Length: 151
Image 1 (cartoon, one colour):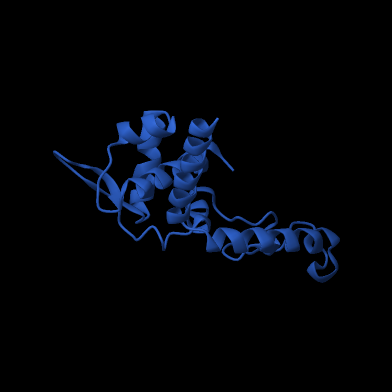
Image 2 (cartoon, rainbow, N blue to C red):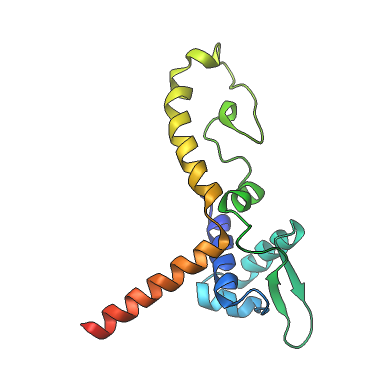
């Protein structure tokens, strides 16, 4: 996964944890998630262009969701930012093409091995949402706080 995709998912999780209706400034997201601000601006603009986010100008402005974070899958974000998720083009659901030099997909041992791993990972990425990122972050934060005060 590229740094761009990692930063995008961290930023989306931060926005979801902040609240769906409350805009958040780029500077706040960058600081909370340790993301370079200029890079974050480009990422958030791209997510806005693809309809995941919208921006609000003026006082109390910033970025907020254009769609329900419970309906934005991790797979959708990765596909927008990185292209097909499949390790081989012959396994891709969105950009299928035969592999160069492959004589027969049905008997390709590499395809057979990677297909199972790919299907398992895609199943998880299609099920998990941006809202799940926020839930995981808050539960991890609570666990850290409990550990800090109980030791």
